[in-house]
Length: 450
Image 1: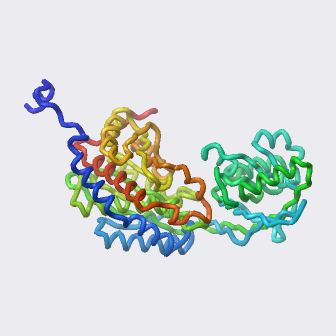
Image 2 (image 1 turned 30 degrees about the vertical axis):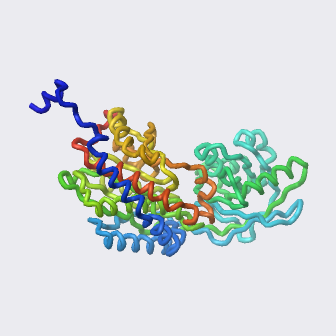
Image 3 (image 1 turned 180 degrees about the vertical axis):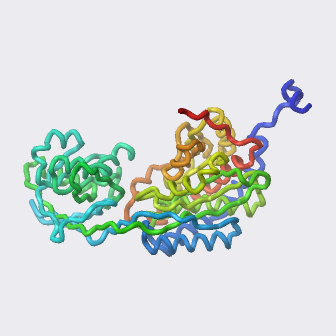
């Protein structure tokens, strides 16, 4: 009868925004009066420091998070086993030998092999693109290739970090250097993952600073002979056990249906992993804790996950997919925060058009804090494996102006994060996760493609 009345237009249906605005406002108000998120990411990053996969620091951090989640009252707190790669940086250095002597700040790229014990001393050829290297391939043989490629976007410029060693080896080079992937530098090198190709010889690869890459380029333009000594002792060890961190609010009516969200608990072995991505884990964790405190128990389960090994393998996201494959039909939404927890702007969403329309209505609940913009296309590396199997996905969108200033550097410390902006991120994640978990019907999925 009620449905007929609604359809006849005699009683307007209550919109999602109207239905959930009181709860959303409670969540936002409570989050803005709580600075625990910043305090907690500071403790995580300073108590344990950097947390590269395979290190005691990562496992100790996971133990602490699990114990603290239990103390916070989260349900079903557990670590889910994941085997992760183990890469050890070791001692490393780069020195300019000619046209003058100077130490060059550097960071070996994750996954790189070592140089011979005495290092590699060779002339350097500077190129500004893969096509430039192809044109100068005859000159690159036996040399160290330096890719001096200015930052445009991360997705575009990171290709030189990821595949530079392959391209340089194809040209017969003995090592590869890349200009750090950043738009701004204070002579700080940035590390990150790289790849090899089984069809070409493996050569060592490292990043140098923006300033030094430009200096060497100008030296080459002036006709100087550039010679560098590169020493790296990196090594790869057998895989080791780690864990995904998991905690929940169990749903009141449909506990087997799940909204999963979080970030990655591991970091590179430089800095303290506060911005990338301790903050992403903490804001999701704090969002669940906040909902618990407010007594907001949604119909569905909200599961916070700190995925392991995002930085140099993605094994955590893959293991989560494999461990929960039978349940993925009942995963109604996955949300990831891995772009820094700066001032939130909204979310990027990947899923059906019908679900996008619903999520946009939920986003309007966040307009009062400037975080309600929902755009098409979003997700994250850790939720990518389950998104590929049909789970709708979202990535938290923030003001990323300064993110790549500190990304994968010694400068990734909690001072780069603002307590108020982190509280806004907690509010944004909590509202989206809560409403998605409490809607009468799950978000509609796109029809499978074959």
